[in-house]
Every structure is written in C-alpha cells, then in structure tokens.
Image (cartoon, rainbow, N blue to C red; front, side, top):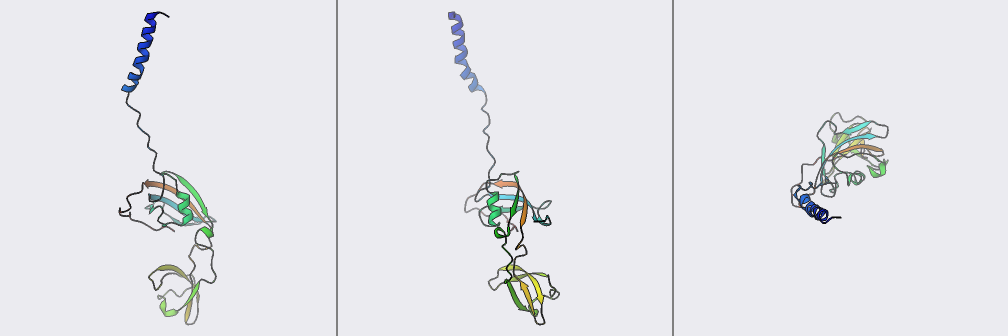
Length: 188
C-alpha cells in the first residue's frame, strides 16, 4: 500500500468519530409508566356476569379513577392491573371467592316493618342500610311478614362469577405521600 493511501485512510478513520459527535443524539425513549403502588389510574371497564349480562360499565362515561394499592378495588382486580400501561386492555374472570364471596344463607336480619320506607315492603326491593357505626351496605327485602321484614344482607354480587373487560386509559406515576389524593370513585 502506498504511503499516500495510508495517510488518507488514517485521516478518514480519525475524522469519523468527530463526525459522529456532530450528529444530534437520538432522543432517549422513556417507557410509559406502569401501574404500581401509588399510581393514579384512569380505567374504563365493563362488568358482566358469567352469561354476559352487563352489570356496570364506564364506557362512554367518566372513567374510574383510583389510586393503586389503596384497596379501592377488589384484590383480584388490583393484582391483574399491576404492571399494565396506558392503552393496555385485559379481560379478567373473577370467581365468587375472589369477588364478593359465596351467598351466605344465614346473612339475614329481621327488622320491624316501620323501619323501612313506605313502598319498600316488596320482595326484591334493594335498600341501603346504615349500621350503628355509620357504615352503609346494600340489603334486599327477602320476605315480608305480618309485623317484620326479613332482609338479605349478602352483597348483590355475592355468588356471581364476574367478567371484567378493562382498558387502562391513563397512568400517573406515584406522587409524594403528602400530596392530596385525586377525586376517587369506588368501583364494584
């Protein structure tokens, strides 16, 4: 190889790194945040029973907003959402044991007729009952007797296999522990 060719090759090799440094660096790709403890999540869901009857849905309405890890959702649902990103979709089947439990035939209370609102003395009527501690729960009129009414205390979804069609609309990374919580809507 001639000395002149060797000098030209050396110049080319020496100038390549400098030329590469002149190019703008490729932007760093930041992965979208995944759902983790403390993430604020916007979620669209449709809840169906095992035969496909729609029980509840946010589709076309305001999405459910919750903070992951604050036990605002049933544990099976929260576990299934962990690690998902905005845009992810998932179908989740939740058996009664992991949802609202099996129907307990002994979960009933007998109350005087006068304690119920007028017009509620019909079997199947759903009411909200308030316990002495202020906690509310859904109840259903099970039987109407002469002076009393038997109330079914089981959750309305007890004993049902639930099918969730989920779509994560947004995930905000966890905020400082002292930051105010977002407006929250409780899920089924």
